[in-house]
Length: 103
Image (cartoon, rainbow, N blue to C red; front, side, top):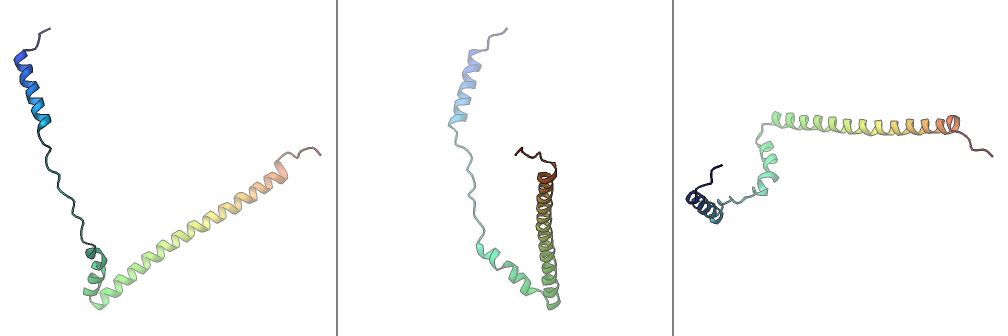
């Protein structure tokens, strides 16, 4: 096995030390967007639409909102139904299947 050249090792060591002392690249600062861009942006855009465009956008938003509400109500109804079925099955189990303790 060859022994490494001491000059190459010294050069590599100096290069590694220089890399350690080198300053890291500057990190760009994060600049948040102004809140006014989001607060009035939609209303400004809606205000620039013609009359029929406003009606179409509001109707589309209403339809999407009602669809989401319908889905949520369906999930709630399904949860209530499953709870009632589980309670009924537990009652049947306790009355007919579970062993009765001796008196």
